[in-house]
Length: 292
Image 1 (cartoon, one colour):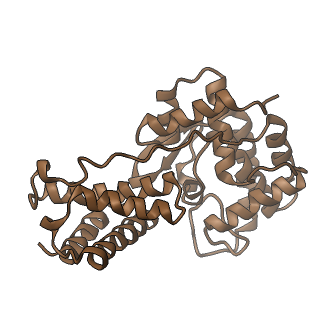
Image 2 (cartoon, helix red, strand yellow):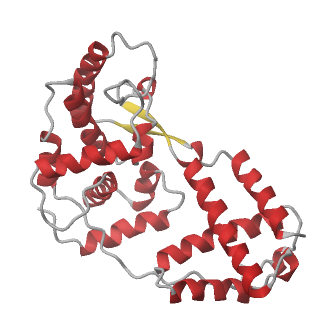
Image 3 (cartoon, helix red, strand yellow):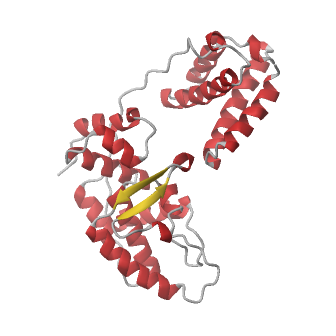
């Protein structure tokens, strides 16, 4: 069967599963580049011609170009998903799946840098409740620190999803999870809601997103990244660390582990598909000596 036809069919399958646009693009581009490599290097155009050796050689080629092990494994993940679809649809037998003999690249142990408790407090205090924008930005930092949610999840957080003691998060693959919110966050959410309603009283576009721009539109991932970066600058964080929403997420995870949360429970809170990713936080927590 022609690989070009299979790729189109596979992408339709991914779209039906309602993967995020970013994930769909990753699957599309990574598999397209792999299939282009097969055609240019080996003149392979049909599914039955692909062997494990071809996948391994593609990984070696990427490695020689200086690609990191984590990057190559992300490519392997997309390729594995493609061939799993081929097996599930009956185009090849499981025993003929070329990914069966392809091992993951061994990734180096990386210490995930995180903020100190004092730095998090400084970032929260970097914004006041004097205006809508300042109040919104303060709540953005507090929401990250209190719940550990992803940037995109925060952008998609609806006002109607905020309850008295929990918030409903719609994560990757449209999977829902409920997270508790602290009394301190709830207190500022009430204050923010009052300021938000006053600011948007003449806005008729009706976006339900909890966090909106000064024009009343949903915040973008890039806008949130700027909010966090400015908070870090105002808090006087000058050491070598990435000032980003994801670093706050790392910090949240490490704090949870230090306070006795088990890896399985933390993986559920963070919305991880399995605990292998969460275990990286535990490893980093053991190596990180920045906490006070």
